[in-house]
Length: 284
Image: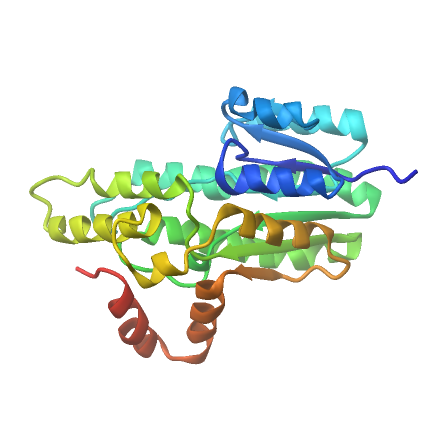
């Protein structure tokens, strides 16, 4: 009998992480599903997955989970770095402490976990790292620059890592969804509502909050909302990246991802800014 591959997935309490855990489990992988609140994973445990508490920003907790998994199964075969959140706010007004928190979760945490699993993958001569990015890993819009910067960083790190570890049989893939209907959107919108009444960007914050509210809660019809995808579509791409014989560097997910990334490649910055960003996003 073939021994099932073992997948470690972060941020499984809801959304893309939960859907990915279910997809990989149903495909026959041995899934270790993690989240800050393990009680949110009870139904995944009932389906036969191993669940563990993991705050990805806690180095000791990350090391403990990887050590336990490797003691049980030898190595992590698939690491899915999914945990993250979106910080919204203007460049000028956002406090650096919040920017550091954003990068700690969205950049340093996946770096730490990947560094922890790489020796085991290298010793085994195989492994796959799947980093859940975003279309905003390749361009940016007003009001989300720090979140988008964290995804740009994740993309650059993935590109470098892919080339560094290929000779050891380790593959690295980025999954790049467009807007996804999950609870993630509520957090992003909530940050926008925190701006001070006297902010020179107050009107922009209010328009941006309405814009994203329309996408994630369906309060109005927008292009992004019309083509928003669900978490399972992203999980399907995660599964493809984790199990493909020839892993691609990038897996855009959804019509908006494919179309806007193609537009970004084809037109100059000025055209992209005016023909797409200023037409589709609120701008101060």
